[in-house]
Length: 215
Image 1: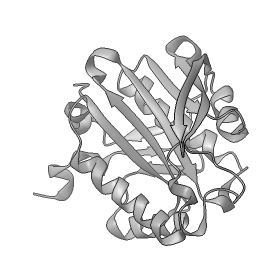
Image 2: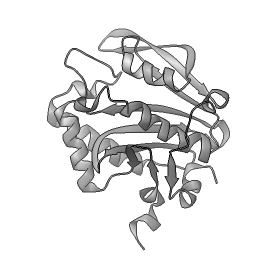
Image 3: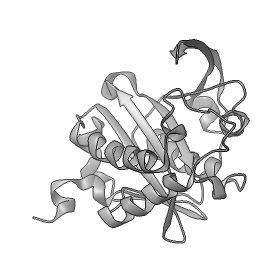
């Protein structure tokens, strides 16, 4: 058997006008770890509840690799976390995570993402999330997508706003002994349909459907 026959998600590819989203090979995963090593946000920023990107460079790189490995090992139909590497001109520049619990019943996902610092402010984040959500809404039968961001994370909030997410309350969490408030955002199918997905292609999906709990 080929690796893709054993694990069909290796053949899933989403193409947008500038980007390609898919699982990386081991060599590409090492290149993605280098992107994290080089930095994913300015030193004064703290955009993530889990402060992995504030750790020393080698720890950041290892976090990325371990996250990719653990998501595949922990995968269950209907309860999964798909870390799609974002490729620009065949080179990895970041990740979009799409995660779900009891997807067959709830038809809801949460999203998170990061891009290498040198790739910020070019619209890649919006384009990558649009591609990932096209998979969810148009091919897996998703009904809702949610996201969370700190109030000062203008980039994340901006991406969500462009795609039609609406306010959905707040979350209160503790990081390093401090209570932090995040804005919750929600995108429903009605507002999703306003987005133009005409240039987005999804291939290799059919054999993956049982793994998503969407067959």
